[in-house]
Image 1 (cartoon, rainbow, N blue to C red):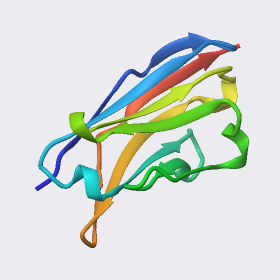
Image 2 (cartoon, helix red, strand yellow; image 1 turned 135 degrees about the horizontal axis):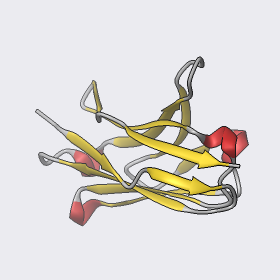
Image 3 (cartoon, rainbow, N blue to C red; image 1 turned 90 degrees about the horizontal axis):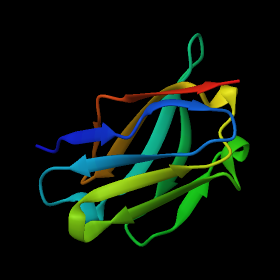
Length: 115
C-alpha cells in the first residue's frame, strides 16, 4: 500500500511563490508517474503537471512558465514549485502516483492566493 502526503500549502500574495512536496511511502515511487492536480471551488479537478519515471514532464497551459514539477527518487518525494502565483491558482492541490496499474492519491493541501 502506498501513502502520499502533501505539504507546503498556505496563503500567499499574488506574485509570490510556494513549493509543494509529496512524500510517498513504499518502494514503487521511482517507477511511477507522479502528478499534481488541483480542485478550485466550484470547478472540476484538473491535472496541473505530471512527471514520468524517466523525468519527462507535462503542464497544463495555464501554469506553463510559472510552475515546475520535479522528483527526487532517492527521497521518494515529488515537488511542485509554483512561482508568480495568481488568485486563480487558489485550490486544493493533490498529488497522485500511478504505478503498476493503480492510482494513489494524497489528502490534499490548500493553496490560497490573495490579490
